[in-house]
Length: 412
Image (cartoon, rainbow, N blue to C red):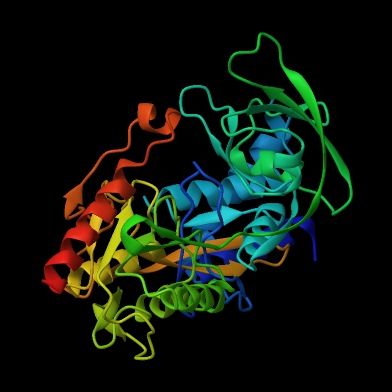
Protein backbone atom coordinates (compact mmCIF):
# COMPACT_ATOMS: atom_id res chain seq x y z
CA UNK A 1 0.00 0.00 0.00
CA UNK A 2 1.38 3.46 -0.93
CA UNK A 3 1.82 6.31 1.55
CA UNK A 4 -1.15 8.12 0.00
CA UNK A 5 -3.33 5.01 0.20
CA UNK A 6 -2.37 4.61 3.87
CA UNK A 7 -3.21 8.22 4.60
CA UNK A 8 -6.50 7.91 2.75
CA UNK A 9 -7.48 4.84 4.80
CA UNK A 10 -6.46 6.68 7.97
CA UNK A 11 -8.69 9.70 7.24
CA UNK A 12 -11.65 7.51 6.25
CA UNK A 13 -11.23 5.51 9.46
CA UNK A 14 -11.46 8.74 11.43
CA UNK A 15 -14.65 9.75 9.65
CA UNK A 16 -16.13 6.31 10.31
CA UNK A 17 -15.33 6.66 14.00
CA UNK A 18 -17.42 9.81 14.28
CA UNK A 19 -20.66 7.87 13.79
CA UNK A 20 -19.89 4.86 15.99
CA UNK A 21 -21.27 4.86 19.56
CA UNK A 22 -19.70 2.90 22.44
CA UNK A 23 -19.95 2.70 26.24
CA UNK A 24 -21.09 5.98 27.83
CA UNK A 25 -18.28 7.75 29.67
CA UNK A 26 -18.09 11.41 30.56
CA UNK A 27 -15.14 13.75 30.55
CA UNK A 28 -13.58 17.10 29.83
CA UNK A 29 -10.41 19.11 29.87
CA UNK A 30 -10.58 22.86 30.31
CA UNK A 31 -6.99 23.61 29.40
CA UNK A 32 -6.65 25.45 32.71
CA UNK A 33 -5.77 22.97 35.43
CA UNK A 34 -4.38 19.80 33.93
CA UNK A 35 -6.48 16.79 34.66
CA UNK A 36 -7.60 14.03 32.36
CA UNK A 37 -11.23 13.32 32.22
CA UNK A 38 -12.31 11.47 29.18
CA UNK A 39 -13.34 7.99 28.12
CA UNK A 40 -10.97 5.03 27.99
CA UNK A 41 -10.21 4.71 24.25
CA UNK A 42 -11.51 1.76 22.26
CA UNK A 43 -10.14 0.55 18.92
CA UNK A 44 -11.64 1.96 15.74
CA UNK A 45 -13.31 -0.73 13.61
CA UNK A 46 -11.96 -1.33 10.09
CA UNK A 47 -12.77 1.53 7.72
CA UNK A 48 -15.87 1.04 5.61
CA UNK A 49 -15.69 1.28 1.81
CA UNK A 50 -16.23 4.97 0.94
CA UNK A 51 -19.42 5.96 -0.88
CA UNK A 52 -19.18 7.48 -4.37
CA UNK A 53 -19.78 11.04 -3.12
CA UNK A 54 -17.05 10.52 -0.49
CA UNK A 55 -14.66 9.41 -3.23
CA UNK A 56 -15.36 12.64 -5.12
CA UNK A 57 -14.86 14.86 -2.07
CA UNK A 58 -11.63 13.13 -1.08
CA UNK A 59 -10.36 13.59 -4.64
CA UNK A 60 -10.53 17.33 -3.96
CA UNK A 61 -8.57 16.80 -0.74
CA UNK A 62 -5.81 14.90 -2.53
CA UNK A 63 -5.67 17.49 -5.29
CA UNK A 64 -4.97 20.17 -2.68
CA UNK A 65 -2.49 17.89 -0.85
CA UNK A 66 -0.43 17.28 -4.00
CA UNK A 67 -0.57 20.91 -5.13
CA UNK A 68 0.92 21.98 -1.81
CA UNK A 69 3.64 19.33 -2.02
CA UNK A 70 4.56 20.31 -5.57
CA UNK A 71 4.26 24.09 -5.45
CA UNK A 72 4.46 25.53 -1.93
CA UNK A 73 7.44 27.87 -1.54
CA UNK A 74 8.36 27.19 2.06
CA UNK A 75 8.89 24.50 4.65
CA UNK A 76 6.23 21.79 4.53
CA UNK A 77 5.38 20.02 7.83
CA UNK A 78 5.81 16.27 8.06
CA UNK A 79 3.07 13.91 6.93
CA UNK A 80 1.70 13.25 10.44
CA UNK A 81 1.43 16.96 11.23
CA UNK A 82 -0.48 17.64 8.01
CA UNK A 83 -2.76 14.62 8.48
CA UNK A 84 -3.58 15.66 12.06
CA UNK A 85 -4.14 19.21 10.85
CA UNK A 86 -6.65 17.96 8.28
CA UNK A 87 -8.54 15.96 10.92
CA UNK A 88 -8.51 18.88 13.35
CA UNK A 89 -9.87 21.13 10.62
CA UNK A 90 -12.73 18.69 10.07
CA UNK A 91 -13.45 18.59 13.80
CA UNK A 92 -13.62 22.39 13.99
CA UNK A 93 -16.54 22.32 11.52
CA UNK A 94 -18.54 20.42 14.17
CA UNK A 95 -18.48 23.41 16.54
CA UNK A 96 -17.84 21.16 19.57
CA UNK A 97 -14.86 21.88 21.80
CA UNK A 98 -15.04 18.40 23.34
CA UNK A 99 -14.71 16.39 20.11
CA UNK A 100 -10.94 16.41 19.76
CA UNK A 101 -7.94 14.54 18.37
CA UNK A 102 -5.16 13.62 20.80
CA UNK A 103 -1.73 12.58 19.64
CA UNK A 104 -0.44 9.23 20.97
CA UNK A 105 1.72 11.15 23.47
CA UNK A 106 -1.21 13.18 24.87
CA UNK A 107 -3.54 10.19 24.90
CA UNK A 108 -1.03 8.24 27.01
CA UNK A 109 -0.82 11.11 29.53
CA UNK A 110 -4.60 11.43 29.78
CA UNK A 111 -5.24 7.75 30.34
CA UNK A 112 -2.35 7.33 32.75
CA UNK A 113 -3.91 9.91 35.07
CA UNK A 114 -7.28 8.19 35.06
CA UNK A 115 -5.57 5.07 36.39
CA UNK A 116 -4.90 7.04 39.60
CA UNK A 117 -1.12 7.35 39.32
CA UNK A 118 1.63 8.65 37.04
CA UNK A 119 5.38 9.22 36.89
CA UNK A 120 6.37 12.85 37.31
CA UNK A 121 7.11 15.58 39.84
CA UNK A 122 3.89 15.53 41.89
CA UNK A 123 2.15 18.76 40.91
CA UNK A 124 -0.77 19.91 38.78
CA UNK A 125 -0.30 22.83 36.41
CA UNK A 126 -2.42 25.36 34.56
CA UNK A 127 -1.89 28.07 31.97
CA UNK A 128 -2.18 31.74 32.92
CA UNK A 129 -4.69 33.44 30.64
CA UNK A 130 -2.90 36.76 30.25
CA UNK A 131 0.43 35.41 29.00
CA UNK A 132 0.05 31.63 28.54
CA UNK A 133 2.76 30.77 31.06
CA UNK A 134 2.58 27.37 32.77
CA UNK A 135 1.95 27.80 36.49
CA UNK A 136 2.10 25.37 39.41
CA UNK A 137 -1.57 25.05 40.45
CA UNK A 138 -1.22 22.50 43.24
CA UNK A 139 1.57 20.60 44.98
CA UNK A 140 0.97 17.05 46.19
CA UNK A 141 2.09 16.79 49.79
CA UNK A 142 5.43 15.07 50.38
CA UNK A 143 6.12 14.63 46.68
CA UNK A 144 9.24 15.70 44.70
CA UNK A 145 7.96 19.13 43.57
CA UNK A 146 7.17 20.18 47.12
CA UNK A 147 10.41 18.68 48.46
CA UNK A 148 12.39 20.62 45.85
CA UNK A 149 10.95 23.90 47.15
CA UNK A 150 8.50 24.70 44.36
CA UNK A 151 5.51 26.85 45.31
CA UNK A 152 1.96 27.27 44.05
CA UNK A 153 2.02 30.15 41.56
CA UNK A 154 5.56 29.47 40.33
CA UNK A 155 5.83 29.78 36.53
CA UNK A 156 7.78 27.06 34.71
CA UNK A 157 9.65 28.80 31.89
CA UNK A 158 11.72 25.88 30.58
CA UNK A 159 12.24 22.14 31.06
CA UNK A 160 15.78 20.78 30.64
CA UNK A 161 16.63 23.96 28.76
CA UNK A 162 13.66 23.69 26.37
CA UNK A 163 11.46 26.80 26.56
CA UNK A 164 7.74 26.29 27.13
CA UNK A 165 6.88 29.49 25.30
CA UNK A 166 4.56 28.69 22.42
CA UNK A 167 3.75 25.18 23.65
CA UNK A 168 0.27 24.15 24.74
CA UNK A 169 -0.34 22.78 28.23
CA UNK A 170 -0.13 19.14 27.22
CA UNK A 171 3.13 19.62 25.32
CA UNK A 172 4.54 21.19 28.48
CA UNK A 173 3.32 18.30 30.63
CA UNK A 174 4.88 15.77 28.26
CA UNK A 175 8.26 17.46 28.86
CA UNK A 176 7.85 17.69 32.64
CA UNK A 177 6.88 14.05 33.10
CA UNK A 178 9.29 11.17 32.74
CA UNK A 179 10.36 7.82 34.18
CA UNK A 180 10.60 7.36 37.94
CA UNK A 181 14.09 8.12 39.25
CA UNK A 182 15.14 10.43 36.42
CA UNK A 183 16.11 14.07 36.96
CA UNK A 184 14.36 17.04 35.37
CA UNK A 185 15.71 20.62 35.48
CA UNK A 186 13.02 23.32 35.67
CA UNK A 187 13.61 27.02 35.08
CA UNK A 188 11.31 28.85 37.50
CA UNK A 189 9.98 32.40 37.59
CA UNK A 190 8.71 33.41 41.03
CA UNK A 191 6.84 36.56 41.96
CA UNK A 192 9.02 38.88 44.05
CA UNK A 193 12.30 37.65 42.57
CA UNK A 194 14.12 39.63 39.90
CA UNK A 195 15.63 36.68 38.05
CA UNK A 196 14.48 33.14 37.11
CA UNK A 197 16.28 30.26 38.80
CA UNK A 198 16.78 26.55 38.15
CA UNK A 199 15.39 23.74 40.28
CA UNK A 200 16.42 20.08 40.03
CA UNK A 201 13.61 17.59 40.68
CA UNK A 202 13.85 13.80 40.83
CA UNK A 203 10.75 12.25 39.28
CA UNK A 204 8.79 9.59 41.17
CA UNK A 205 5.75 7.35 40.88
CA UNK A 206 2.93 9.62 42.07
CA UNK A 207 -0.30 8.31 43.56
CA UNK A 208 -2.89 11.01 42.92
CA UNK A 209 -4.31 12.13 46.30
CA UNK A 210 -7.93 11.54 45.41
CA UNK A 211 -9.64 12.05 48.77
CA UNK A 212 -9.08 14.27 51.79
CA UNK A 213 -11.10 14.16 55.01
CA UNK A 214 -11.06 16.04 58.31
CA UNK A 215 -13.30 17.11 61.16
CA UNK A 216 -14.17 20.81 61.34
CA UNK A 217 -15.50 22.99 64.12
CA UNK A 218 -18.92 22.09 65.44
CA UNK A 219 -18.39 18.40 64.68
CA UNK A 220 -18.88 18.96 60.95
CA UNK A 221 -17.22 16.40 58.70
CA UNK A 222 -15.38 17.39 55.53
CA UNK A 223 -14.55 15.25 52.49
CA UNK A 224 -13.10 16.41 49.17
CA UNK A 225 -12.66 14.50 45.92
CA UNK A 226 -9.90 15.42 43.45
CA UNK A 227 -11.25 13.63 40.37
CA UNK A 228 -13.61 10.85 39.26
CA UNK A 229 -10.93 8.39 38.17
CA UNK A 230 -10.91 4.59 38.17
CA UNK A 231 -9.84 4.07 41.82
CA UNK A 232 -12.08 6.86 43.16
CA UNK A 233 -15.17 4.83 44.24
CA UNK A 234 -13.30 2.44 46.56
CA UNK A 235 -11.05 5.12 48.05
CA UNK A 236 -13.93 7.56 48.50
CA UNK A 237 -16.20 5.00 50.18
CA UNK A 238 -13.47 3.91 52.60
CA UNK A 239 -12.63 7.50 53.54
CA UNK A 240 -16.32 8.38 53.91
CA UNK A 241 -16.97 5.41 56.22
CA UNK A 242 -13.99 6.35 58.39
CA UNK A 243 -15.24 9.94 58.59
CA UNK A 244 -18.79 8.87 59.48
CA UNK A 245 -17.40 6.65 62.26
CA UNK A 246 -16.48 9.92 64.03
CA UNK A 247 -20.23 10.73 64.09
CA UNK A 248 -20.26 14.20 62.51
CA UNK A 249 -23.41 16.35 62.80
CA UNK A 250 -23.22 17.36 59.16
CA UNK A 251 -21.08 16.78 56.08
CA UNK A 252 -19.35 19.09 53.59
CA UNK A 253 -18.59 17.53 50.20
CA UNK A 254 -15.98 19.64 48.41
CA UNK A 255 -16.10 19.37 44.60
CA UNK A 256 -14.32 22.64 43.85
CA UNK A 257 -11.74 22.43 41.06
CA UNK A 258 -12.85 18.85 40.39
CA UNK A 259 -12.79 18.57 36.58
CA UNK A 260 -14.70 15.30 36.35
CA UNK A 261 -13.97 11.83 35.03
CA UNK A 262 -15.91 8.65 34.36
CA UNK A 263 -19.70 8.69 34.25
CA UNK A 264 -20.06 5.38 36.09
CA UNK A 265 -17.81 6.72 38.86
CA UNK A 266 -20.12 9.73 39.19
CA UNK A 267 -23.09 7.37 39.59
CA UNK A 268 -21.19 5.40 42.25
CA UNK A 269 -20.15 8.49 44.23
CA UNK A 270 -23.59 10.08 43.99
CA UNK A 271 -25.20 6.86 45.19
CA UNK A 272 -23.33 7.11 48.50
CA UNK A 273 -25.73 9.94 49.40
CA UNK A 274 -28.92 9.14 47.46
CA UNK A 275 -30.81 6.01 48.37
CA UNK A 276 -33.69 6.15 45.91
CA UNK A 277 -33.71 8.43 42.89
CA UNK A 278 -31.94 9.31 39.67
CA UNK A 279 -28.35 10.44 39.39
CA UNK A 280 -28.69 11.67 35.78
CA UNK A 281 -30.34 11.21 32.40
CA UNK A 282 -28.40 10.69 29.16
CA UNK A 283 -29.88 11.56 25.76
CA UNK A 284 -28.27 10.58 22.47
CA UNK A 285 -29.21 11.46 18.88
CA UNK A 286 -32.71 10.34 18.10
CA UNK A 287 -33.79 11.58 21.55
CA UNK A 288 -33.16 8.17 23.08
CA UNK A 289 -32.96 8.64 26.84
CA UNK A 290 -31.25 6.38 29.37
CA UNK A 291 -31.85 6.90 33.09
CA UNK A 292 -29.08 6.21 35.59
CA UNK A 293 -30.61 5.56 39.03
CA UNK A 294 -28.77 5.42 42.35
CA UNK A 295 -27.32 2.00 43.06
CA UNK A 296 -29.07 1.74 46.44
CA UNK A 297 -26.06 0.84 48.59
CA UNK A 298 -25.02 4.27 49.91
CA UNK A 299 -23.49 4.76 53.35
CA UNK A 300 -24.42 8.42 53.95
CA UNK A 301 -28.09 8.66 53.06
CA UNK A 302 -29.39 10.82 55.90
CA UNK A 303 -26.66 13.11 57.21
CA UNK A 304 -27.27 16.84 56.52
CA UNK A 305 -25.05 17.97 53.64
CA UNK A 306 -23.62 20.96 51.83
CA UNK A 307 -21.66 20.74 48.57
CA UNK A 308 -18.95 23.25 47.66
CA UNK A 309 -18.75 24.15 43.95
CA UNK A 310 -16.98 26.70 41.76
CA UNK A 311 -16.03 27.40 38.16
CA UNK A 312 -13.67 24.41 38.19
CA UNK A 313 -16.48 22.00 39.15
CA UNK A 314 -17.17 20.27 35.85
CA UNK A 315 -18.47 17.20 34.08
CA UNK A 316 -18.78 14.23 36.46
CA UNK A 317 -18.58 16.52 39.49
CA UNK A 318 -21.51 18.51 38.07
CA UNK A 319 -23.42 15.23 37.68
CA UNK A 320 -23.07 14.53 41.41
CA UNK A 321 -23.75 18.13 42.47
CA UNK A 322 -26.81 18.33 40.22
CA UNK A 323 -28.16 15.01 41.49
CA UNK A 324 -27.80 16.06 45.13
CA UNK A 325 -29.46 19.40 44.39
CA UNK A 326 -32.39 17.96 42.37
CA UNK A 327 -33.04 15.21 44.91
CA UNK A 328 -33.17 17.77 47.73
CA UNK A 329 -30.30 15.96 49.37
CA UNK A 330 -27.90 18.89 49.73
CA UNK A 331 -27.53 22.61 49.09
CA UNK A 332 -24.84 23.88 46.75
CA UNK A 333 -22.62 26.63 48.12
CA UNK A 334 -20.05 28.64 46.16
CA UNK A 335 -19.96 29.83 42.56
CA UNK A 336 -21.48 28.89 39.20
CA UNK A 337 -20.07 25.61 37.92
CA UNK A 338 -18.25 25.09 34.60
CA UNK A 339 -21.11 23.78 32.43
CA UNK A 340 -19.90 20.51 30.86
CA UNK A 341 -23.02 18.57 29.94
CA UNK A 342 -21.82 16.26 27.17
CA UNK A 343 -20.62 12.66 27.04
CA UNK A 344 -17.56 11.55 25.10
CA UNK A 345 -16.15 8.24 23.89
CA UNK A 346 -12.48 7.78 22.99
CA UNK A 347 -11.42 5.75 19.96
CA UNK A 348 -7.83 4.59 19.46
CA UNK A 349 -6.66 5.16 15.90
CA UNK A 350 -4.18 2.95 14.06
CA UNK A 351 -1.13 5.06 15.03
CA UNK A 352 -2.08 5.28 18.73
CA UNK A 353 -3.74 8.69 18.45
CA UNK A 354 -7.13 9.03 20.07
CA UNK A 355 -10.31 10.58 18.71
CA UNK A 356 -12.69 11.70 21.44
CA UNK A 357 -16.22 12.11 20.14
CA UNK A 358 -19.25 13.71 21.78
CA UNK A 359 -21.98 11.08 21.47
CA UNK A 360 -24.69 12.44 23.79
CA UNK A 361 -25.74 15.05 26.34
CA UNK A 362 -26.54 14.45 29.97
CA UNK A 363 -29.21 16.12 32.13
CA UNK A 364 -29.88 16.36 35.85
CA UNK A 365 -32.62 14.16 37.37
CA UNK A 366 -35.14 17.00 36.87
CA UNK A 367 -34.15 17.32 33.23
CA UNK A 368 -31.98 20.43 33.49
CA UNK A 369 -29.44 20.98 30.71
CA UNK A 370 -26.20 22.40 32.08
CA UNK A 371 -24.03 22.54 28.93
CA UNK A 372 -22.38 26.00 28.82
CA UNK A 373 -24.68 27.06 31.65
CA UNK A 374 -23.49 25.21 34.72
CA UNK A 375 -25.27 24.79 38.04
CA UNK A 376 -26.31 27.78 40.10
CA UNK A 377 -25.50 27.42 43.83
CA UNK A 378 -28.34 27.68 46.34
CA UNK A 379 -26.08 29.96 48.37
CA UNK A 380 -23.69 32.10 46.29
CA UNK A 381 -20.35 32.84 47.98
CA UNK A 382 -17.43 34.21 45.98
CA UNK A 383 -13.78 33.39 46.60
CA UNK A 384 -11.61 36.43 45.85
CA UNK A 385 -7.89 36.71 45.11
CA UNK A 386 -7.54 38.42 48.48
CA UNK A 387 -9.12 35.37 50.12
CA UNK A 388 -6.61 33.07 48.37
CA UNK A 389 -3.65 35.24 49.36
CA UNK A 390 -4.82 35.41 52.98
CA UNK A 391 -5.62 31.66 52.95
CA UNK A 392 -9.25 32.38 53.84
CA UNK A 393 -12.07 30.09 52.70
CA UNK A 394 -15.40 31.93 52.98
CA UNK A 395 -17.19 29.18 51.05
CA UNK A 396 -16.20 26.49 53.52
CA UNK A 397 -16.98 28.83 56.42
CA UNK A 398 -20.48 29.42 55.02
CA UNK A 399 -21.04 25.68 54.61
CA UNK A 400 -20.08 25.02 58.23
CA UNK A 401 -22.32 27.89 59.37
CA UNK A 402 -25.23 26.50 57.33
CA UNK A 403 -24.85 22.94 58.65
CA UNK A 404 -24.46 24.03 62.25
CA UNK A 405 -27.69 26.02 61.93
CA UNK A 406 -29.49 23.10 60.27
CA UNK A 407 -28.41 20.54 62.83
CA UNK A 408 -29.22 22.89 65.71
CA UNK A 409 -32.76 23.21 64.42
CA UNK A 410 -33.05 19.45 64.05
CA UNK A 411 -31.88 18.90 67.65
CA UNK A 412 -34.37 21.45 68.93
